[in-house]
Image (tube, rainbow, N blue to C red; front, side, top):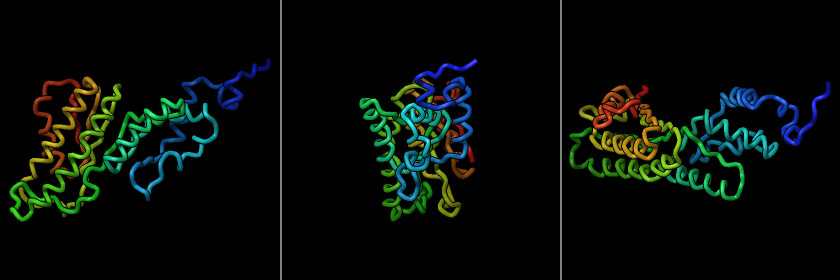
Length: 226
């Protein structure tokens, strides 16, 4: 018995004869080692690293859907996240395949080489202010990302070299920033956003106390990972 050739088969080839669920599993396996980064010229974006995205419009749509659901997109700078979110809206308006990620990792302290302790000398205040400014620049784009709705995952990557942290109590602005991000994202997504903190053990234990007012929430909006 011959299988009728449909318009979709012509667009995707013989793969179109498979159920969508099975195709999604195939794409997930094909993309399992894919690393997508925005905001670093030395890294490649999805457009350059995944040739399958350029095979056909139908295949691109399917792949972008799988990427959005299963791949954590690394974002290096606040401006890159803002462009990514804005590009999603532009592509949708132009009826182009848009990458609308549900899971992102943001490199918060990628340019920081030294984090003073909470009881830092006055001479170090300029360094503390610079780190605070760098962190606060993430608030607006993270809020915009969260406002897209649906279930979201935001990995707050605080990883540093061990020698980058001064001995002594950790600075309170790290906790204040994390609590603000968790609060904004929790509200914007109506409790459907999970925030994960990655960093040194001492830092993740310190930031774990960020739960504060959210301690009664279920599920908890913050997890930690060393």
